Length: 544
Image (cartoon, rainbow, N blue to C red; front, top):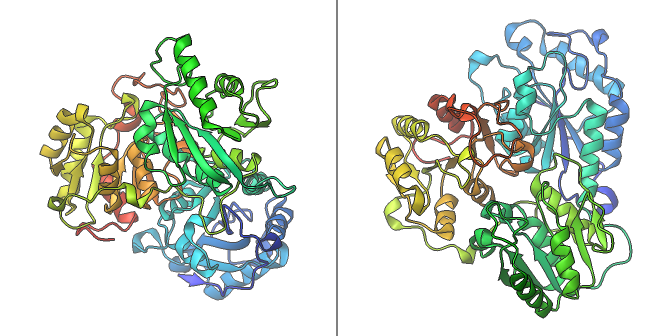
């Protein structure tokens, strides 16, 4: 790997550390400059339209810049290192100085750890820039760029060109039409999670926060709840029965009110006036100075906002595309495609709350809420395979999960197969192919403790994926595309995504598989899972 010397960056704006990103990493050919195959001639360098102005906007915002580029032409002898450096000098002449250059000089057959889609260049760039991969965003034009970002735990942005394959476009969690558009959205997201400017608000007495949905939904709202908690003396969380166990795991929550909301639950009971009157009375008893209502992108906050008004809460903030009338004091809007944790953080910021400078915008659990891990599971470093999901459309087909377990065991991995009490038949079948059956043996805190000591978790789009993200454990994501990966994929944790991202179930939000034979996941080869663990540097011996 060739690495350019780090240079002094401009530093964060006004001395305040950015909430989301410290640095932007950029692919070279097809992203910064027009792609001329194996170019060693500085005279052939042509920046993409708008590149200089876009990069200068990033520099002005205090973000450090690095180039991360595969250059197999060095290995093949098509140009020399000196010629490559001359090309880079010309790029800097046209586009301005970069804080670091990271180059993989190898070919695919060399098996290096730096050639994208491997994450080595991303990790190296983060080190050069004095940050971590999770605080970097990488902009590239092909699937290898996005895959390298995900595998490092960074954020990937795909700017398609005529050479970008349709399947790469389908799999990307964040798409931009061109480099200036990518920069626009990077800066918009960066700004959106900062508290709105104005006079410093006094620390609130009691804040009521709301997230009524499943365990995964509650977990991804955690950073935003911590932001509210930083500006309040007491935080009360209203959640539903399906999210209560996750609510108990969140830092920053002082009290929990559990109550089902029939306009949120997927199998709702009828609206009962007495139940609504009971809920209003409970909300009024909280004595909240303000309420922040967190929802998913397809849900409405307005029914609850009406009940909160009836409970006498004076200041209410929520995301609402629908006209709220006098139900909301802070009506916030978020573009489609923003990751759910950032979507919630941006609402907290609009309400006047932001994470403290010593907190990171990552999922997190209360360590004191996790029980000791069972001693009979052996040393940490095993692979957790979780085949099930509360929504069957997002579950791994049992026959595929069994083949994955067999392949992982054959590759030397210790496999723990997890699932709820109603999934014991599935976990027993999967574990019989290779692994230890833990089906029905753990509640959510117990599962979180097991996940926290894993080398990696192999899981679909369901709660344990977010438990893994909260523990910083790498994820092999068997992601059914019924909901967008960019919004619901594992957040800021090393990830390899597998499955058909353009299957017919895409964006249907279906809870039950609408397509025979589950084509989004059934085509996964178990060898891909083994390879994914290798990319994530999870060894068969149980270590990393």
